[in-house]
Structure formats: C-alpha cells, structure tokens
Length: 167
Image 1 (cartoon, rainbow, N blue to C red):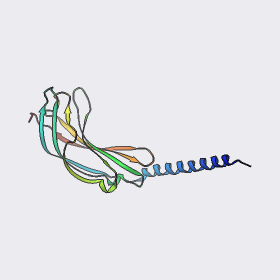
Image 2: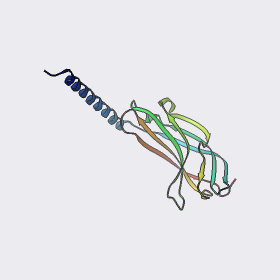
Image 3: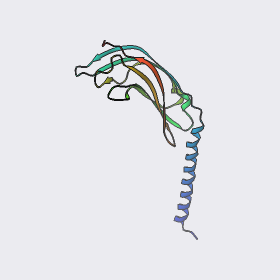
Image 4: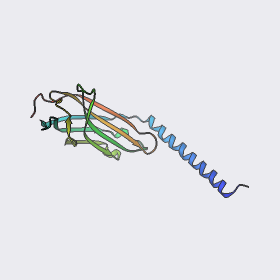
C-alpha cells in the first residue's frame, strides 16, 4: 500500500500538470484571435518649440489621439499598455524615440477612446536637432495576458514635420 504522502504527492503533481496544460492551451488560443487595431493621431497645435538654456530643443504638442484597440482583448487578456512615441533620425542615432503619452487599458470597454492632450512627457532632444525635422508618431502596445507570453506591436503614422524656427 502507498502512504498518504505518496498519494497526496501524486494527486498534486497530476493537478499541476493539468493546470499547466490548460494554461498552455489558453496561451496558444490567443494566436487565433483576429486582431485589427486602428489608430489616428493628429497634431492640433505646437504649443511651444524652444531651445533650452543648456542647448537642448524642447517641443510641446497638443495631440488628438483616436484609437480602437478592442480587438486586442480576448478572454485571456489582463490589460494592454499603450503609448505614443515620436520617432526620428539624427546624425548620431538612427532611431530616437521620445514617449509623449501612455496609458494602461484594463478592460475592453476602455480600449476604444478619443483624447485630446498635451504631451504627458517632455519632448526633448539632446542637442539642437529638431528644427525642420521630419518625424513619425507611433502608437505602441503591449498585450499582457493572464497566462502565456506578452506580445507587442505598433502602428506607425508618418508625415509630421517640426517648424524650421523656434517659437
């Protein structure tokens, strides 16, 4: 006969194995969801564009962000982290990214939104490289599941340009 400890160990091992299998199936099922997020970002105003006393360029923008990220939510989604970044090239760096706004979206009902804001974080370039600079606004998102691996993607919106002179 087997002891109580041996039987409890076998039962616990079996239960954990089944739980791991169910978690793996849940994570795998996310690969079959049809994800079609959409977004549009408009620059409504350049509030100021100035050179700081120590030489860095700083920009303040008023943004109109419209996004529908509801398709990212499945029964396995815990939350979505979304952020808007300004992306541009300089002679020193092939890619500069400056985060302008971010949000944690905990529910599908909150994943379709329209907001008008000034950039939440300062848009500063280390140097004086922003005058007349072309840049992209990119909406990035990271989907955090209840179980399984986190994944990320983005929508790049190009065609933005900063003025040639400070204001």
